[in-house]
Image 1: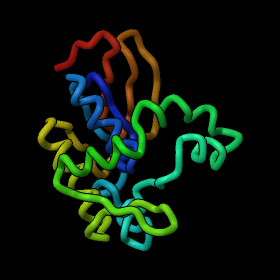
Image 2: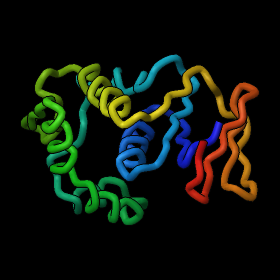
Image 3: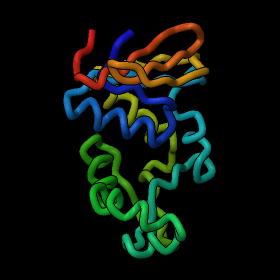
Image 4: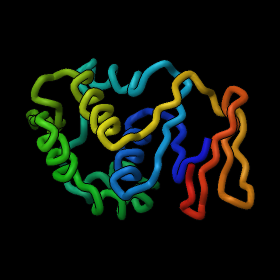
Length: 161
């Protein structure tokens, strides 16, 4: 199988990465060892899914010291407000609690997973469930993932089949 972008893991970062990749026009696949996407996400915030925090970017950077500086660019490129707007555009409003934690208005992590997976399906992201990546290597065309005996190529040239 050939893709432009292959993402290992259907957790929150993998799901968002695949959405942005597909929106940019890349043929995208998500390789996931589990049988469904977002399994750990379903348990976050006691199944309510604490999406983000109302603190400033500076607060985030301090909270993640010594790695906060590494996150700076990402936090400015896609802020907590951008995240809230993304979910609002997909008809899932959010709320800020007294402690600054931001949750979906429904208090259900499953609603968050549904929004992400539905958006990916709309964007034709391909999911490869039940495949554990055993090896990743660079070749002349890009990168090759070996998962459960299957060869998945992410082409650096932009050519995909």
